[in-house]
Every structure is written in structure tokens, then in C-alpha cells.
Image (cartoon, rainbow, N blue to C red):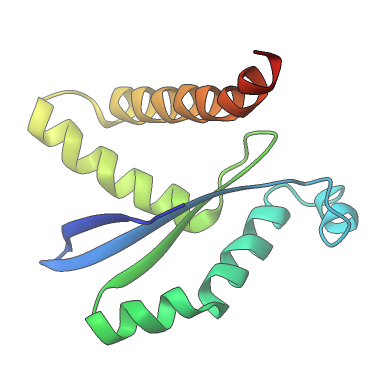
Length: 126
């Protein structure tokens, strides 16, 4: 999936949001995921930082922010921080409570991910 480019993310510095979904049932994460919520997301965030996209972001002087969600709905720490910052800005812009904006943001993202996951399944049925 291509990253989402955000031109003015933090103090005018651009960012690339790299969205991915990871499974807590994969063999490399299963043991830790059975004990610690979010551990599969943390592993995926670390993998994202080790790959070449971080290097490319550094060259462009962009922040590289992995937005990782586990298949059972737990978001990674970096995603939670980024979405909280985004919700804060949206709540001020829309003159509403931040908690309401966060709820709306997570609801929309969850629905979008469900729809995206259903498309390939439905295409096999037709």
C-alpha cells in the first residue's frame, strides 16, 4: 500500500503515513501477542522502521509514521499517537470535543478497513 502523504504534519514538517494490518496469529508474533496486547503491532512498526521507507523519508526530511492495526483491532502505539494528534487538530477545527472526534476517527477507519478487507473476498465469489 502506498503511504499517505501529509504536507504539514508537525511544525510544517511533512509526514508519510504507512498504513498496514498485521495478524496476531502469525508465528513470529503469536506467543507475545497471547500475553501482551499490541505486541504484533509493535513488531510491525519496528519492521516498517527497518525497511527502506524510513531511509527515503530521511532523505526527503519527512517523518515516517507507521499506522499499524492488528487484525483484532488493536492499534500500534505510533498510530495511536498520530491519530490522537490528528483528532486534536480536527476537534479544534470543527469546534467539538476531542473525545468525540477520536471516536469518529476510529469508527471511520475501522469501517474503511473492513470494507477494504471484504473487497478481495467478494471478488472471488463473483
